[in-house]
Length: 257
Image (cartoon, rainbow, N blue to C red; front, side):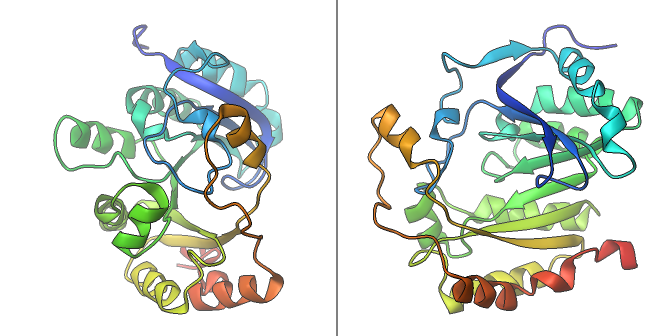
């Protein structure tokens, strides 16, 4: 039975998402994020409450999503993204629990920032694992100092989360945003590649080229954009990152086991 007290604070939804998980997906973007990534293209999701956000229960979300089930076929389903979805872990867990009762594939898109092995979060996270088929984990930077410069937060708990998911057999896609001059260092990319290689459940690795499509939101919100003048990476830089991170090697990895 659904807990009527649980409600999610929703930023927006996308009915026919095609990049945040396998197949066609219903994507729920939640409000709220503690990280302050310098290249964030959705700074309007940072605040937990926003004038344009709205609340709904997991059952209400699932009811809306199920209208599109015919389009999901065998591989699609529901993805919860953000903001940072783990800040609303109770809502995500209940939504995914209800979704699994309907046989729906569930994906969580996260940067891992709220992860801790301390209670009460850790028990809640273990409950979430029961109902989550795939984690899309965005590793901003492998170097802790550079990670903090880029996001204002340390990355040790994020890397710990990746190891924990691997040790518990949870399927992952690893994502890394390629920002010229910030995340494109050959040595850093190699360290990231080595870390990814140490994980046992990686199904896919994606290089996401930096873009400036969300810069106008920073200006609208009156936030100083510190990457002014940084251009998106060219094809050569993208190829180099893909080669170092061996992105093609992991695609469909678990399906070949």
